[in-house]
Length: 251
Image (cartoon, rainbow, N blue to C red):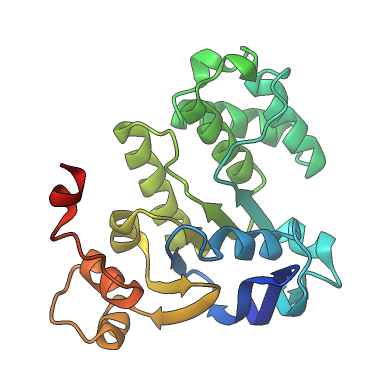
């Protein structure tokens, strides 16, 4: 469903993403991990067409993002790490706007919007301006907007930003249900717990390069560690800091 072939992104002399290759199957929930500045968000933005690829190719659902961007955008839903929304609209007006973009019929969108507001516990805020929403509420509204048009592929950057524990649990359950329904999810996150709970496979990027990919078991074998926790595996692959003298430096 998602094919990333030798993609590179450079900013002047700096290479943010360096010839990475990933292939994600239909119905797979893929976790994309890496330290800050590793190239995760840059990769996601190239997948959505927000950034131009310098070299390489990305195809989603058989469509090349560079050659058929509209076809790709019909297939994907993008949940960024920061919810950029038209804040002078109400929540209901925003979802009506999204429904119009994707040509969803009036009857279908009215029922679905009502259900989504209830699911994300935003029904009391449906007619309030988005500028009055908290960060977590805006994040839930963006997720509702993506589910509304029923994409085949969800590209997600730090999905739990601003969410309280109850909302985070709801989102996890939604992602699991989407995977069971055959949707493909590409989730970039710093939360190892989310990856362990949700993902069928993972990829770890560091300094713009993929340093490990596969199932948790396969990545553990690459890390060559006896420890089974994803945190230990991640730190083994990316370089665990020596914290033995931290307090001595602070005092």
